[in-house]
Length: 328
Length: 256
Ligand SMILES: Cc1cc2nc3c(=O)[nH]c(=O)nc-3n(C[C@H](O)[C@H](O)[C@H](O)COP(=O)(O)OP(=O)(O)OC[C@H]3O[C@@H](n4cnc5c(N)ncnc54)[C@H](O)[C@@H]3O)c2cc1C
Ligand SMILES: Nc1ncnc2c1ncn2[C@@H]1O[C@H](COP(=O)(O)O)[C@@H](O)[C@H]1O
Image (cartoon, rainbow over all chains, first blue to last red):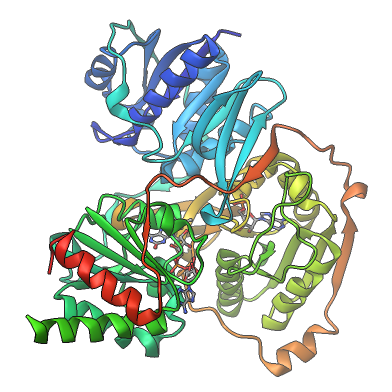
């Protein structure tokens, strides 16, 4: 067992998934706390240039995990390639960015080592061994999780939880690793990614966004928030469940599977603030939350908050705006 | 087609959660429970596939005895029968142990398809379906937004980040983890609720399945998160709070 933390970096068609570097920063932090080294691995085809780029960070070693069958992502291909690498390198901990791709193969990979992936981790501490902090109940509570059983431990890191700016520079050797993959062992046949023909709604240009969540209760209540958006001269946006229910079109969805916005003001109305929603709006300059539950996670990122019933607060806002208009 | 749908029962969404005395889980005695949201979509997908291709839908849940309510609901919506792995402390199993329990119940049924939700609302590991697939030696795909059964195989639409999708084909049997919004969930009819009473709901004791608890991930403590931002709370009546907010937007944020 080597004392290295192995970070699996994600790229697509030669372009980095940004959170890979945040995960690398998490790796450096963990290694510093636990007295370990960090290595990085990049699975794919034609990843030399990317491997050389990562080699300029403070790392023990960079593995370019190269194979023709890794050109298109498949769960079977990635799990098999990384299983082989991990058996050779024998890291004590393996870190991944918590992306949709990682969700697809990392649990499978961990199972092969009789481990469960500790997913979507937001903080790491050392208390006689590593403690990984993750969210429960859609962000309403946190949990300290201690890994057990034979190493390696498998951990995925939440987007935005660690700062890629804090990465230490260095010079690491690059090693090519060619796994023994066979086309016959890969059961998924993937086709090229595509986008659905999107409607004309571009929320990224809006300066003011009024976003509505399930707190609005039913489709017939949507005009209540629509009116506020109109009074502010802003765009209307929504959480996923609101779009899933067909109350607003999917083009207005904000979050990890929808649009990413950073307006001057984002007003979250009846939105709990789950991480997948926050990922799409955390970058807003000013965040306002209106929610009846003072413990809703949205208040963790809000600059201004009103704890109250949206059905009273939102009409009062519209009224207040109208009378202010008259006064000015 | 024989389809198994894995369904978890979770506290209803707006529950006020209190941390239990030992600090390791919530006080769950007096909470209300419901079907985990993506699992309701998974059940609907299974029912629609059965309507198109014929066969059988089996609902599978590991949970305390009370979770039989949620299985009855699945039967009322149209599942043909249900398997209930009973364990009063289901949240103390880690994913590996839990998936091994589910595999013990699901494996002998030799299903053509297993559907799970993509994520549970309480633990939120987002991985039980994938682990189950690996234990059963089946191919899988996650975050599924459409499924079409072909001859001996299945074509699914995977959700990728930021509005991208990808189609994938796999041979059957297979495991899919279903994303919310894949379909429009039906309600149980009165007739369905009546019929459900006579459908088979088989209880299996977790202890009899021969699965040793693994301890690869132990929850040592749960607690309320610390705020990262200082939120200025605007108080008073709805009217007063609203007026304060407009003032802030005008003079501090300067957007009006
Ligand atoms: C892979 C994946 C991708 C996802 N992608 C996205 C995404 O892109 N975008 C997204 O939004 N979600 C996404 N989700 C879902 C996400 O996890 C949450 O389930 C969702 O954001 C919750 O939406 P909500 O806040 O509207 O609903 P809830 O969580 O149900 O919150 C409703 C809120 O309204 C409040 N409320 C109720 N009544 C009132 C009232 N009268 N007055 C004031 N407040 C009230 C409640 O206190 C509660 O906080 C994704 C999930 C997964 C697993
Ligand atoms: N105790 C359980 N009983 C039945 N299915 C479960 C259970 N726990 C998790 N699942 C299934 O696995 C999915 C993902 O759960 P998780 O990995 O906890 O996020 C859920 O949506 C369910 O379909």
